[in-house]
Image (cartoon, rainbow, N blue to C red; front, side, top):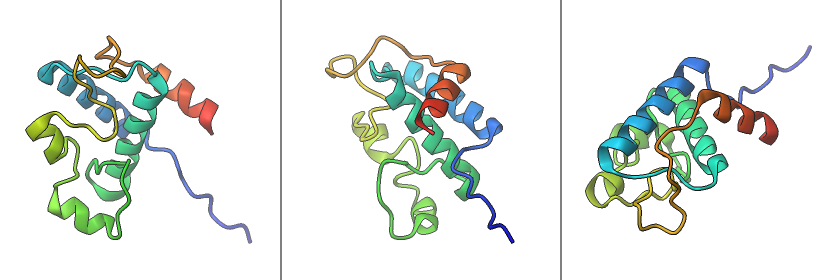
Length: 121
């Protein structure tokens, strides 16, 4: 009997939802994606995966003892409290224009995210 394969990828629907959210939030807050597109793609993928598994886009760049409890607390649900209050994004998804890693993009295509995902698989 074969063991079921663990799904490490998000669903198409959640990936698109998180991509769209990220673009809109960057534009609304005058922040920019990282100059390295793979950073943006990996973070959006992580948010989408958490949305599928937990029902909320919990920050994928932190370690949690209990992810379900963290989702209920909402502090680290994207956009997290540090981002909303001070424009501090630990994941480097939303960067202020003066950040040395900030690129010039506030958009990323679904195809780009998928291409990067496949190269990292």
